[in-house]
Image 1 (cartoon, rainbow, N blue to C red):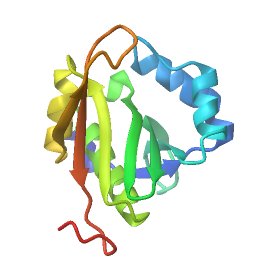
Image 2: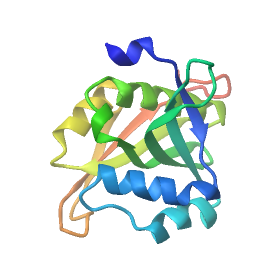
Image 3: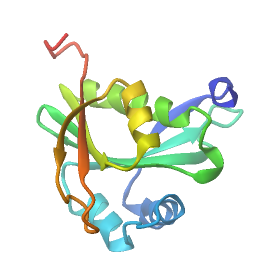
Image 4: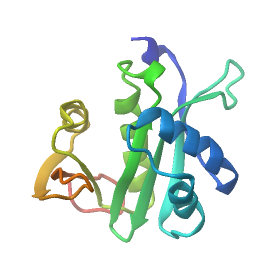
Length: 165
């Protein structure tokens, strides 16, 4: 319940945050994106936005980044390309809060759907995404470089512009 007492805010990352994002990526994943991968998302992909989940300081200003994500906003679909919560901050409900903020951001940008791919073996992620309202939409065989399948998950977004609800 520690996370509920905190003020959590979504903060957009910029090109100046590539090294910080690369370090967070390395802390979160066994097969992390390289600095070039992260820089490509920040500098070369016009649809990609990097985001931090930040615990606001006592003054309400930006504080410590506890998670990050890359989300592509393309026409009616927002795609979460990568999302990570730093290990010391896991199991505190931050992932669920982060997803809610990303969904709100995507809906506010006019996106009608949120989607992502996840490793078929990642049960913790599946439970989190289902709790956040995503449902399985399909399986892509041998999606990952090691041959593992990917589960595609999707959620309809509610906004003033969409008619999905």
